Image (cartoon, rainbow, N blue to C red; front, side, top):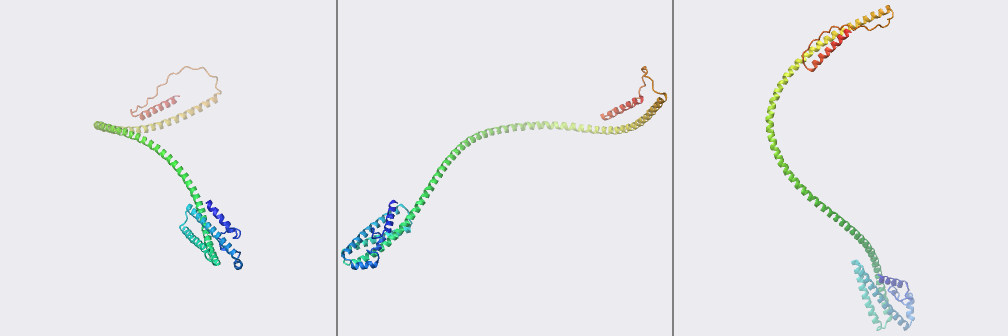
Length: 358
């Protein structure tokens, strides 16, 4: 790349410098009229002598040699550029054609230089050389353009290579991270597999022990089945006996139900009698209340007539005991409710008698 840049700089400098001040270049060879324009060149060709022709021939020789060297350098630079970069097939074919044309033209130049010394008509050869140099300059311009295109392609390739290098580095980093993560995952999976194998071994042992326990349970269940059959046989006999007893109890319960019905009827009759006696007692109590009211009124009237009571006298002697009260009716011995009603009725009669006595 440094050689190529040097060739480009020399090529551009030679393009910018005029033909009269510097050495001959491929682009300045078209101006090989030994003057500034064609009219002045014709007038000088008519007036100049043989020395000027010899000087022009030597200048042409030097220019051809320098051009040949420049073409060789360009070819070497192109070869280096082509060897360092990958070009497309079309550009390679164009460069090869240009190189072959340049080789043919250089050979023609060499032949023309060999013929210059032997030929006498120098002016015609100069015009031929000028035409050849013009064609040569055009081919060199095409080569320069192709060279610039190659430089651009090389720069693009360098940019692409840098981008590919960065992408490759990034891919390398990602691959390294992926390798590390994969190693970690593999180590974690290996640990998990080891734990899983241990747990599976433990589960196998537990399943074996469970299978043994299931066999034992089957044996026990068979024993329990035999015992249950024996117990069922015994219970069937006991159940038949209990069935007979239950039938007897049902008969007794039916008898008891009849007795309870009879007791209910008697209880209803007793309740009716109690209601009648309660009504009688209520009338008696009302009569007693009326008598008490009359006695109280009489006592009030007596007190009003006699005046205020005198002082309290001494306590008298205890009087004789009164006659016992009338005994109540004895009821039938029955259930708890009937006995409770009888007791409540007797206590009620006793309270009434005590109230009448008072």
